[in-house]
Image (cartoon, rainbow, N blue to C red; front, side, top):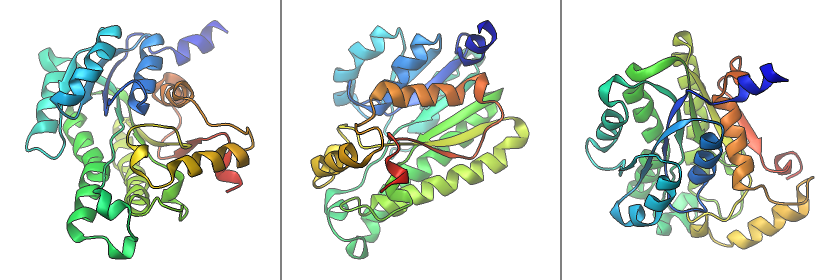
Length: 259
């Protein structure tokens, strides 16, 4: 029992979590659990407006908060530079950001603009590759990288639209990063939560209907919590998951098996 708790502990590990928006964000759920398991954290949010809301959350975890808009030149580089000041290593990274222009998100994928599609892909997918590259020189020998996806990557989900192809690309990116970074000992995964009422999800049309469907059809007959998402992420970055990489793992009450 003692050995198992040591394997799942994050004591002595240092993590970078990007994408805090408020206390309802998946990034916050991951940060809370990681901190409770002993991790030292560096957190980031998109802009100064968001920082007003999440600064008190970061203070609760005694974690520095850094503003980082991944669309801005050198923003990710500055984030990693600050996170690794004084030669500090990174044991895990959790990437929890996604965005698409509402006009493109709410329309048919076939009608999406090239500009909107490219921005959604850059922010939601390619930023993970850029972050991995920037962190690579600073990663510990058994580091882990985690990103967030959704069932709409594998299936055509009503009203998920443009984000479906973007998340599909993200899941593919995970497999390629796992292959490329594996020889150095780095593990890479995608976590696929069921629908949870986050600020980002509120931009989807009829998101309440999506949540109701998940409650009714998921084998567990309920939505998952932020803590449950955080617990999966914490397991994946712990030593207990040392033999796993390149996977998309669902935490959705089983909804993906019946949808």
